[in-house]
Amino acid sequence: MQSAHHGVSSALELRLDLSRRISTATEHHAVTRSGETVYLVERDSQVRKSLSELLESSQIKVVSFGAVAEYLTYARPNEPSCLVIELDPQGVNVAELQEWHSGVTSPSLVFISGHADVAATVRVMKAGAIEVLTKPVDPIAMINAVRAALAEDRKLRQRKTELARLQERFSLLTPRERDVLPLVLGGLLNKQAAFLLGISEVTLQLHRSRAMRKMQAESFADLVRMSVKLRIRHWRENEPSPTQRAR
Image (cartoon, rainbow, N blue to C red):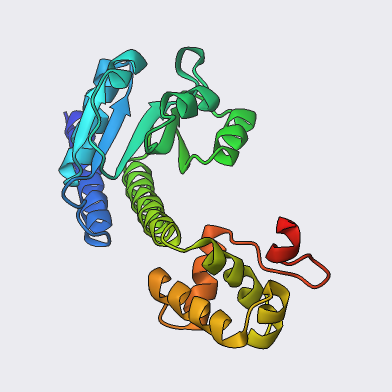
């Protein structure tokens, strides 16, 4: 009788400890933002239910699927998300996952593996996975991995949005303004850049001023940062000028 009572007490203590750990983890992280979703693909219905309840208990929105095909037919809204999926389920690999999401924003990936597979883990981590968790999944590790994946997806989306804005601004530049940028970004003085383009220094300054205004650069340093993001190639010594290349 005492043994049975001890067993029940131990089980209760474990559940209370787990509850405290989840609560502590949640306190140290912001609640998942509105419009963020975790997509869970898990064939085992019991595991799928347990993981869904775990994430929902931490105020994380979950949409679960029993098969990859179900996930692929789901109309995902364009919002921050992450995909929690079995490692190499039914032979599916990372390359195929990336192909499925071609043309759309791919969610960050968290893999669950039924056994420790070092080679597979290294492969998916190199391909960009946030984490690989081994079953039975540690609740705290799962919550932390999902939150990290959502945070990473937010950052990627912000970068893409910013890049799209910069590309739109760059498209407003005239051909001559685009000729001026690599030269001044390459460190040439106005008179040197003007000489290479075969224009007056005053005209070059005008093109430079217009380019900065259209790019909405607050300073030259700001323009340099934008050029790096846009991958604008800076002029280097001994390179032909835009005018010479056009001949």
